[in-house]
Image (cartoon, rainbow, N blue to C red; front, side, top):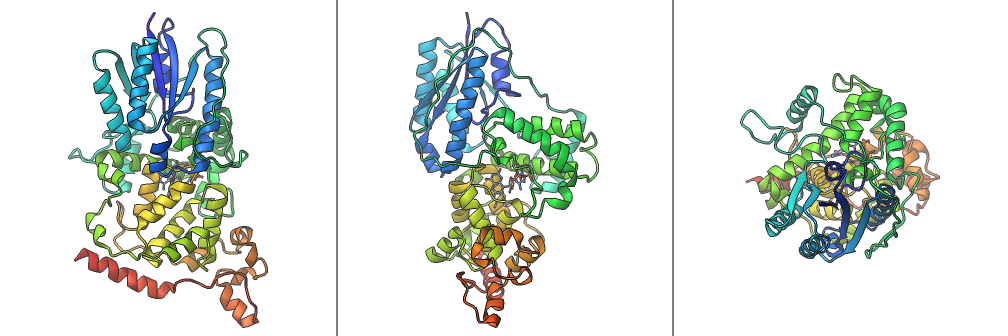
Length: 470
Ligand SMILES: Cc1cc2nc3c(=O)[nH]c(=O)nc-3n(C[C@H](O)[C@H](O)[C@H](O)COP(=O)(O)OP(=O)(O)OC[C@H]3O[C@@H](n4cnc5c(N)ncnc54)[C@H](O)[C@@H]3O)c2cc1C
């Protein structure tokens, strides 16, 4: 009998999982599954304790689902990727594995790990890797010169054209292959922190039903609602997508089922699809420009910007105490839930880099340490976009005004009031500049005054970038 091993990494699901499906194709093969936790590697990558808990719970849910199908999930704990390689080799030897199946990860360390493992298993175990976490594989959406796009819009156009030619295949969960097994839940040895299971369902079926409800009820209004953090206008599916509890193909198929014309026009469904394509864009970029995984900017001269070293200001930003209500409310949302609305990610990132002139990498690291949906490609892409060090640097130099952003996207202050109870008594129209109101009323607020003057900071930042460019 042949033995197949599926090495699960960032693909903790049984539905539409290319590696799992391929391993189960032959009904006679014995199929085993393995997951290797690598806490030291996670620490080096600043994985958030909430994401670790989210992985832990999904791993246990996956173990049960696989056991119901007659497949045992073995969970091992090692230190880092080198140790993980040894673990896989030993496992293969012990269980007489003939073929190893896994889905590619696109980050540099992960790709180097897989390349080394393939070399070391050469001649003993056949390795089969799959492009699974994307709608279209890296390197398949390129310019006429065969290069990766450096700007999103033409990438997106080419991407949709490819999808219209042929949709990627969505594969079913494998059939039951033998008696039901038992699974012993694991406890990962990494700091873990609770998250809200109503917001982030804790098994694959929960994520699938969340996707269905979103596509049936909310996506039609996505265009109008997606920028307003007080509304529930976005999908909140970034967490299951980040650890592979859900695949982007499942998202695409569900979207097209509910909105068959999503590949055309500018409906809410089309705009949401465009967000999924941003996710693809940043992953394709990581492969085309591996330096992005090494904390290097996409636009190289921006490495010359002289950043402020200001631990106090950084701390105020992290704690949500900058005196700019929309920034502070957003940071409290992040710290308390592990998630932040996209509009606010842009606002707080711009504030850290363009108002405080603090190195974007500090923000990138802090986000990773808090986010339940932490994802290197999307996080790096988002930070570099906000810092104007990345692709899509606008023709003008983008600096968000944190006060007008708040006035525009939380006009009655309901989001701010929810996260900053200390501003509860400030009337809606003054909530974005609470101290101006408090001074006039001769009131003292239990809330900091702005730690920086936006207008002055704007001038200083423009000068710092200009100096770096020369
Ligand atoms: C500074 C900054 C940091 C970010 N860090 C992360 C991160 O670590 N992990 C992460 O998944 N997203 C990140 N994003 C992108 C985006 O903010 C989140 O994906 C989104 O807010 C998640 O909410 P949602 O699932 O409701 O999104 P929806 O609006 O419902 O979008 C659907 C899906 O598309 C993808 N997506 C949406 N917008 C983007 C985008 N701009 N870039 C890449 N993918 C996108 C996500 O997978 C998301 O779940 C970041 C953005 C910025 C500006």
